[in-house]
Structure formats: structure tokens, C-alpha cells
Length: 66
Image (cartoon, rainbow, N blue to C red):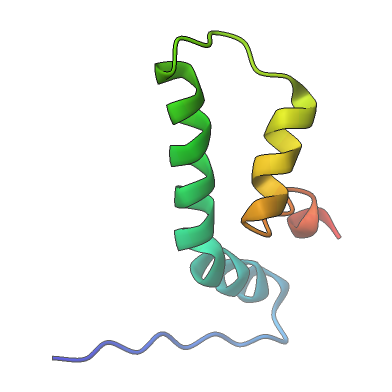
């Protein structure tokens, strides 16, 4: 069984959907890492720590807005 996704990258909405599709696994892993910060008896993490984790997974939350 196979699945193929097709995006018209000339269409802004489809380009955004493409970015989301190819970044989904990295975004999930970044979120998983962030949630694990709270299970290690740490209830507060700094914005710098959040940014470091997002950078580790090459997640740019502002990319969609560019």
C-alpha cells in the first residue's frame, strides 16, 4: 500500500500545507521533548529553553508567516 501527497507549491495555502506535512515529525518530537521537561519535576522552563529545543528540531514557528 502506498500514499502520495501532491501540493501545488505556486499556491500559498498548499505551500503552507506542504511545509506542515514535511515538518510534522520534527514538530511532534519537539513537542514531546518540551512535555518531558515537565515530567522531570520541572514546572517552569524559560523561553530560551523552548527556543533551544525548537532549534534542535529545526522548527521555525515564524516560517509560516514569511
